[in-house]
Image (cartoon, rainbow, N blue to C red; front, side, top):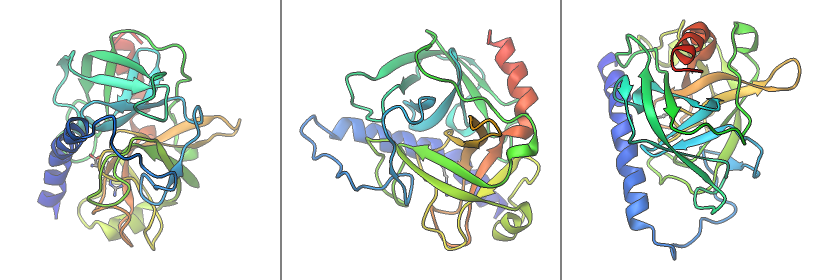
Length: 265
Ligand code: ARG
């Protein structure tokens, strides 16, 4: 189970990259549009333009959140290593990835969580070559205050297990799952201090392949969005008793802030 878990963690970015690549290569401008009713995430609905301005799509087939004008917070399993990297394109500012109004910016550096080995510590920062100041950023939770309740998830990933990447941003809400319950679903695999779980016992709503790196977020006491999780892994997507597992942002908040400062904010 442990081996399966870390393997899928390492394989995910590659699989997603292949999926996203083939999407780009095989979808001409004349491709049939995805119907308005198409769910995404799994069990989701379309996000409105501007609803989640901090959402980022990354060209390797992952999600992310705008942490600051120059930095995107994503998952460690979406990137290879710390260092100069000019190969990633971030798309933001549009729920439709093909909208002419979308913003596209190249990366110039990747910072992967120190000690990341496929189990826990699934976070990374991507520095953009040009700051994006037109989109609101998503502050991260710095304590466990908001690590419960109902969470929002969003992404351009698969709308069902094994499904295609999505053109339009999809969203859903999922309830918090306790570490005890999540550990029972994933014996030996959950790193409880570093991961936070969410989903319905009956399944049906979840993040999925290609949503990785994207934020799980909720409202804070001032009704502002705050990031509590980073899409990391799960057993398939939206299966019963198999909640989505997210990097617990509050655990890493000070490390993320220090790394961000070292990258120039
Ligand atoms: N590892 C996946 C990715 O690379 C995300 C999987 C999330 N799975 C889930 N059941 N919540 O996109």
